[in-house]
Length: 128
Image (cartoon, rainbow, N blue to C red; front, side, top):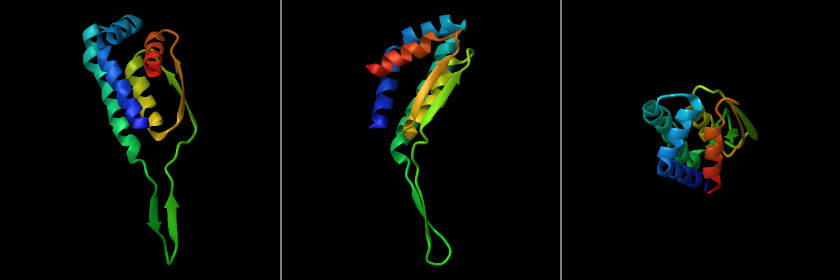
């Protein structure tokens, strides 16, 4: 279910690419073409990659010495706090957010005070 929601967010980002990239360019003071070709595409690719990995996180049973078995569990670690710098607000947000969400963690995001607009817009998209 997590992967499906993450793919849905990536699709919503693709549908709103013009608005998101314009907002990110104005917010961070970057050239629009750079935001479209690098920042935005890296973010969407990271989100799709980890959305695909969300259902592949499993534990393992390991053979130990003698008749013993070792069991590992892959489970969320809890709450993940993200402090996003101003210079790459979209790329760094999804570079950290996507793996945490795929693992099932709760995420609290604190964007830089200089570039909060795109993080707020992504929050808006996530609610849809």
